[in-house]
Each structure stands twice: as C-alpha cells, then as structure tokens.
Amino acid sequence: MDFISAKNSSLSPKMIGFLIFNSNYFLFIAAMNKLAC
Image (cartoon, rainbow, N blue to C red):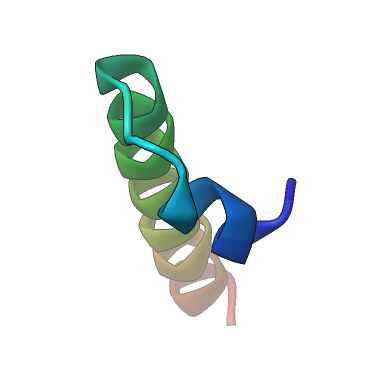
C-alpha cells in the first residue's frame, strides 16, 4: 500500500490501528534482534 495515497485519504480507525500495530511489530522485531545479537 502506498503511504502517500494512504496519508492523503481520510484515516479510518482501522487504518490507525493498523499503523499502530505495524509500529509495535517493528519495535518488537528490533528488540528481538538486539537480544539475539
């Protein structure tokens, strides 16, 4: 999904939840990588 087109369109609560989930998932992966190294 294009971030620019998503940003221009009205943000629905579902989209906001999706972005929050992605950011939390990214932080989780980064933490796991730091523990693994």
